[in-house]
Image (cartoon, rainbow, N blue to C red; front, side):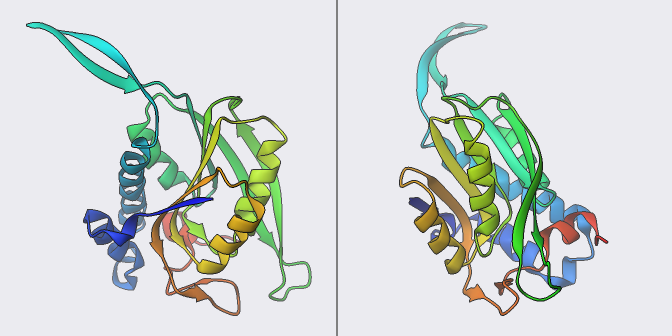
Length: 217
């Protein structure tokens, strides 16, 4: 798997990452969502450098200009519900992309720290021979993304798979490297230290879904 860690170079990306982690601004859900969206926009720009382009000619008021446009067909699929702001960030740049949505959550059958991943709802465009972008803010254990990837691969055969996450733990990256094909791309806005005993990312930012949309039952 090819890993692209965008935080290795200082940019405005790190500015937005600092804000989404800051407990002093966590009570502002709109600001949190907007910053996740901005991070998605920055990641879209970086990812766009890996795509293919075709030559075109544009008619301007004063003449003809030769330029390029994206030739790849893209499908952006977010993991509900935390992935929605990140999804919008990608759509702001890849405005011709088709879309997909899939649910995945931790199920604790014994009401302890053990959990499995339940994948239920899914609605996605045909992604055969297209670029499939799977987006989710947090890569903790990696089990959700692996489960989603396996479920989606039952539906089709994409040309290439790109996974975009805002914050990742080393344990999650290791699982993806062991479970996903070598030609997958993993895009990371920030690599954190570890998982705690409850499999949450440290230092992380808390629950991205709750911060964006409020606490759940």
